[in-house]
Amino acid sequence: MSVILLNGLFTVLTLWVAGFVGTFRKDLTKMAGMMAAMAIGMTVGLALGSLFTIWLPGQFYQSTITSMLIGGLAGAIIGVPISLMAVLDGLLSGIMSGMMGTMLMVMIPAPYVDSAVKFIAILCSGIIFLLYIMLLGEVGAYRLKLKSTLLSKPISMFLVIAVSLAFALQMPTARGNSELKAEQSQNHSGHSQHQGDSSQLTDSNVPNVPELIVKAQEFSFTPSTINMKKNEKIKITLDNTGAVEHDFEIIGTNIHIHAAPGKKNSLIVSFDQTGYYQVVCTLPGHEEAGMSAFIQVS
Ligand SMILES: [Cu+2]
Image (cartoon, rainbow, N blue to C red; front, side, top):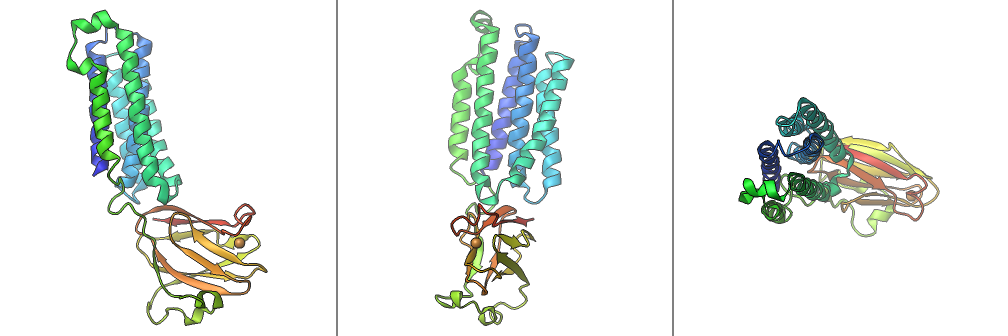
């Protein structure tokens, strides 16, 4: 699981920088120490915030609190050898960015969460590496030589980051299947889709599926916010009450419902990942004119 690997990477990087700051605290300016505490708090909070959100799907409260605590703790640890001000700096940065990391993941439409998490992991570990180069420069070559170990070589940290990312980025980050499967059942075939008679759809095949009617007109969907539970099946009926064609496409999935003016069409959908999904009408100009909606899967 790449989430575990990435969590491990950020733990190692935090301890590494903490060890370095502790060892060379006399050679570091207060400013550099505070910068280190703040940078670790921010990057670790942001990275863990986003990782926990996909690790604990649907448990936004738990993932927010956890990443705030761990981010704050990581920042504070770096500040301990420097000063109380640095501890506060690290603590506050970690708490803030832990919260932001989780919020960011909740805002991103589900199909893009996986790439976003990977991007954040690269960004945050890159920043920590730059921070480390900065700290090495602050300490200076002469002092470094006196207490030099393999761990104070930039190449060591670079290799640790590169190898961890190389493995982590190949694996899906989300739990279970990273491929979003908005499963769709075939309740229309060929031309019947365009006949628009929803009564002949799969009522007999799939009993007890609640129906949600989404009205489409120029240029909006009603309702424009849809709440669903993960793995819950819902029959979405697109009821085109407008004067021109409209469709209902869920971005990042294969779900596409089309309806001619005055017609209806249905599709049974379910989601195996929590998150926000954006819905648009793909007809030229319609999305821009306001034909978009959101599905929140919790
Ligand atoms: Cu439209």
